[in-house]
Length: 589
Image (cartoon, rainbow, N blue to C red; front, top):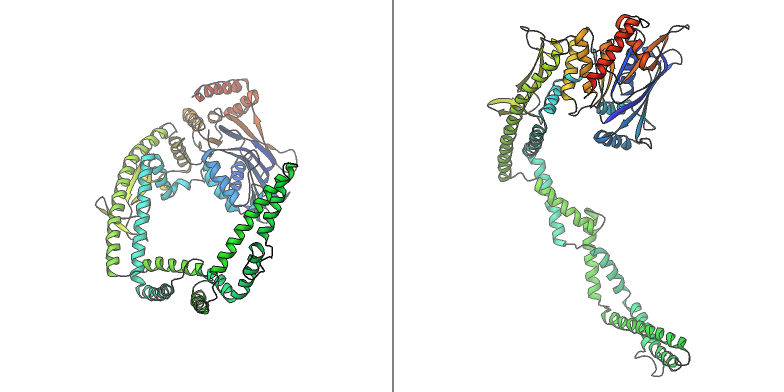
């Protein structure tokens, strides 16, 4: 099943719909009802829910606003993409992983959107809609009418090897344009680059002369403090050393910490045989004596290394002054100055406008241009091969969709030169080249034998165009694209066996997608996994509509109404039941 299922849709205050809820399933959902009952409002509500343009004229005067709410159940790749985007925007899915969407439109035309429990721009609903739903109807054919979409559709059909080739082309194109733009910028801004390079070199020369070392300013500050207070430090260290280990200035009989600890330890050890507790304390005194001896040794080393040299103090002052000269110009501290120098060296390499480098970049640009042209040629050949298969398969599908004589052609043509993009010789023809290659792809329809092949948007009526879309979606089934597909009156002008074929193809599509179909054909409705009926209520002063699920006998009565307008006719119900049985058999994989 598809990566997204719209589990529920609630519509309030939109057109003839006062308040109704559509429980939807993951397979094929069919929506039927009498003309004017409000089937189109369901599609309109879906459009609003996924970021479509709001028409205040469709909002009911009471209560003065239309609200469309939906619950999406996402899974797989689509779930990861959509959930990440919603989370970035401050929303979050429900605990069960479903996602709530809401769109409100007032009679004044104001519009609000909520997604994942947070107020969001309406454009965010549009972003989600692009990922999860595609609407096909007689006025919603824009997606596959755009040349870029037609090219993308053909590329998707061509398969994974073609996609790898396209990825290689896009990577090579990006590298080529980077080198070309770099070369052009170096030539165009040579004077400014040289001036910037001169300033950077001056700064690097000054820093190199001083040669600052990491953390040097902090080390020098600490050393200056020691030198400035050398005498006070010496007095304190000598007194401390004398107290723990004796010293030259103390009387010979002055006890020190080491001697006292030794006397205490020996005294306790003498009584350890009488009370072991004193032996334990004696061991701890021995540890203390060892620690005091270590401190004494370090104090001796400190005194030996303490330098009160005025010349060294002056040198430290001068070095700190030199470092301050750098930190005033380049950074807050010495480490920052060193980092600035690294950045300056990197920037200098990018400012190079020497003839040698320009020649090297020119050669690299030419090499990459050749690589891009070669890959674009291979992509073009791959597209042409896929175009034949694609056209053949879509044409086969059209034969069963009341267009037995129609044929689809897919033209892969060199992109014209002269647009705002570079051109290269591709397969012997000069063509405009972009990251997607050097081709323009155009879907053309031959409506009947002898008819000219016209671009899809010019060669097909609304109903034909919808069926072409359906044929393409069937060909694409399971190969990506939006997982929820909506078809609004794709069966206009069709009946008989062709209608059964449309139902069968929609049911096939529903094996890998969620499919919502608005139809007036019982042959199509019979294939539904869930059948919803939109019914009018004209009992009050204002006409309203609601939606209900029909099953079993009630469903047969609805099909009988669609067949002959006689829901209570025994013959009509028998025909409907026969149709349901045929559809159930056809629906089996």
